[in-house]
Length: 316
Image (cartoon, rainbow, N blue to C red; front, side, top):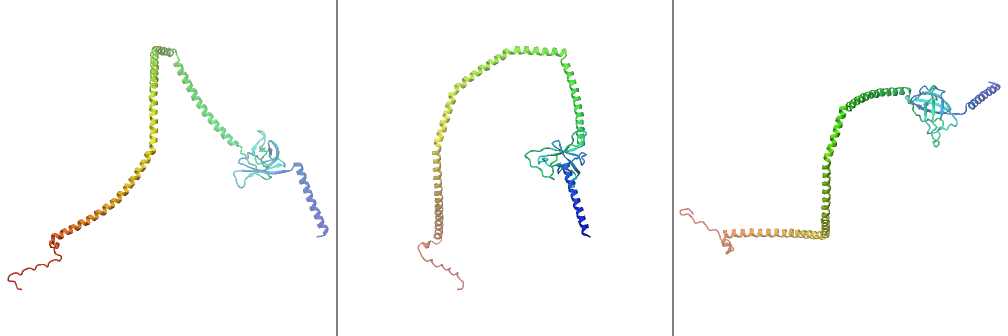
């Protein structure tokens, strides 16, 4: 390839790069610099790319992509471009909404908190789920069923109220009113008859109370004497407790010593009895020996045994 061709190709490439840069810069200046964020929702509600992104009700960007999440298919990934300088912070919440009932859905970002840290570009804005139309229809249906049940209960209560009113009308008719008047008149007469007796019983109760108060006043000194006696007894017991405990300790000590002495004496007595037993055995042996060999008391040597005399006519 010739040098002129190489130079021409290089110039064309530089020109293309320059044109692309100029286009990008001009488009960025026209649209304004933007940064990307994303969020995840369980229900997108017909949201499409190009939908507005609102920050505190102000349009600050647009949705660039709406697609199922590759890692969790139960949620929808929503990408959005937001104007550079929008104070998106960690307390912001992204939710699906709409400006009016007839407009297309939008992504609404709350303003969050001023002291919360700013989210860097590419971060995930925490989502807040909205109720879908199907959920609203199910709730409305449930409310309708509850309303029907409530209406049936109200109708039953109304019937019961009518029955109660009818019973009240029966009770408050003229014959019943006359009966009530007679009952009240009889009650007044009975109260008038029993009033003197009630007054008499009240007087007796007052008299008994006064007598009981007099008895309690008389018993007061006796109770005081009993209390004083109990106090003196407690003091006496308290004063005698320590000497008695000391005496009991001495008695225990003396009993221990006596027990030790009795054990020693028991051992000595045992030895003495053993010696007496041995002496008794020796005396018994001596007595038997004297009975069998009385000559042993006189002679030292035992005499020879006597020979048996020969029988007559026997050969020698």
